[in-house]
Length: 257
Image (cartoon, rainbow, N blue to C red):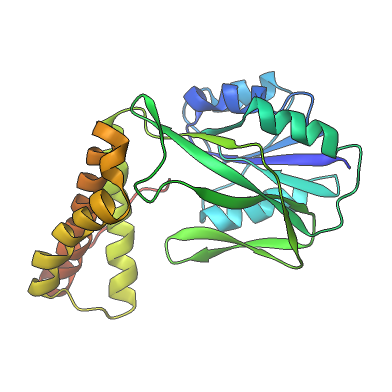
């Protein structure tokens, strides 16, 4: 089986190099769909021989679908710029390339590294995602604020993990949370959800308790505490911004990510 790797980027100079390096010897081509990065993202992509296409940002699903259409080979490996193939997954894919799997796609377990440790709970893990699929048998679509892969056919499983190196600092995580809450507030407003005071008071602490205790974030040490706190912060911002839109007609324009 021949594989086209597809990566979408926007100012991903820092994480992109190890992501592309992990693909070497595994895929037949790399397609990078870039949304006019202002840093050296394109320089890094071309260093690894990637075919670069610049395209204005629409949403993550649309960008990924465009990259899939550009892929020249029968199988697509979808990789985010802050992810990389683990040595175990590389070896598994190397063996898999000698065969032709009888399925539409293959899921991989994804593990996340955050604030110096692998996160094993907090609602972040375990997490299985279909990332390798037959070209023309899968399509990304937006599910609320996140993209979701819709697969036309059965999915098999790979054992080697996909490694996700998320936010480098608490500040970066908080900034992304703030931006995502703007998108969420606009989405709620578009669905005519009301910005009521009682949910604003109750939902944030419940979000913390759910993440820290029910999802066992307490077992993830300090990073688990930060994740739970920022889940509460996200809920508060989302509902506060929604209330502000309804009360003052405030216009919220988040940046793409």
